Length: 172
Image 1 (cartoon, rainbow, N blue to C red):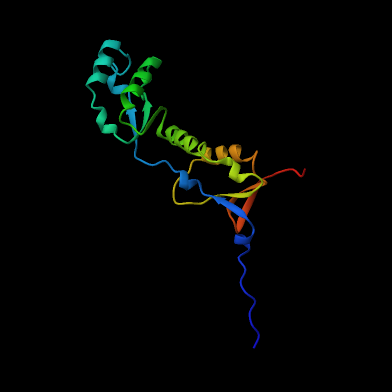
Image 2: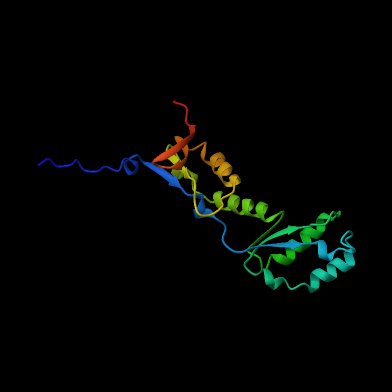
């Protein structure tokens, strides 16, 4: 009776590091703060009225949330208004920034990816995992590529068993 050869996991033996961007997916609820309701006739920011409205607003509703600050009206809003809102949100919100929730998501990914210890990827073969359960923005993939390229031996996209080559370090 012949014995079958042992099954060898070539992926595990290859030394490939899998990086799953879902592990860096921003935590917390995303909400939008729109300046539009605080504008006179939804067009003009009156400083005195705006400051009073910001003073009276219940900022605690943003506790622990990621807040996108926008103006959905076609109005000219002075930059200081966004700055004022940012100071009001600071004690409560997890994170806030000017822009849509999509922009906010990208900024949070950027913040998380910039915390990575890139030295651990030096001269390694890295696969950036694709096809997950969460909607990772294309920005996160381009940013991790930009960050990893100076360190890695090779960079791939997909799954360790089926990858798309992205970058290979030139031979020295």
